[in-house]
Length: 165
Image 1 (cartoon, helix red, strand yellow):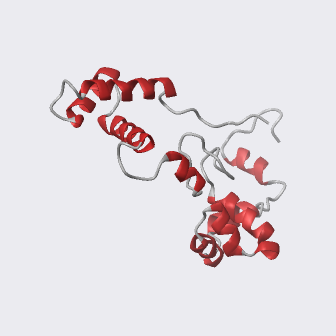
Image 2 (tube, helix red, strand yellow; image 1 turned 60 degrees about the vertical axis):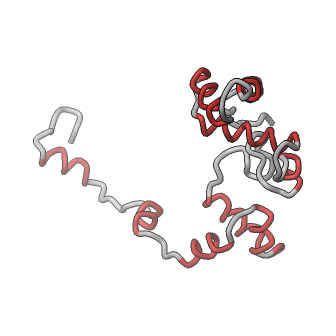
Image 3 (cartoon, rainbow, N blue to C red; image 1 turned 45 degrees about the vertical axis):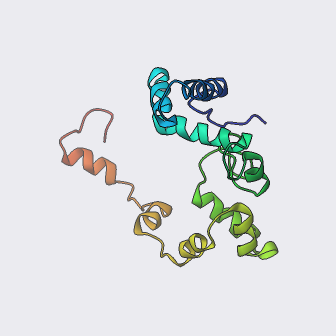
């Protein structure tokens, strides 16, 4: 089965090149932020996007303290580039998550499932306490129509033509 994940806006090669350009421009600039603003303007991206990429590379290479990308993935945090894990390839839909929990709650329990899916148990329980909205009730039950309703409507609007009786 193919993965239907939307690719990021910028290719990985462009990210690497932009970060390299910032590190090279730091020698010619008075601050790293000035270099980031300059490079981001040349490449047509926001300064904040490039700043986050630079920070991530600095942490991964040991230039700055923090949790590296590999450690974040090992700890179970979402990998923003790879999108690993259950229901991660697309936007997480609460209705699907709640249906999944309902299906498996007898076997595993709600809280362990929510912990594994990184889904707040309070979201699940509030959906169960919430009353069913009138629109959903109305949509689930088809309206009862009398057989002569449509013909009567056409005649009353003066649209009686041949073929419509």
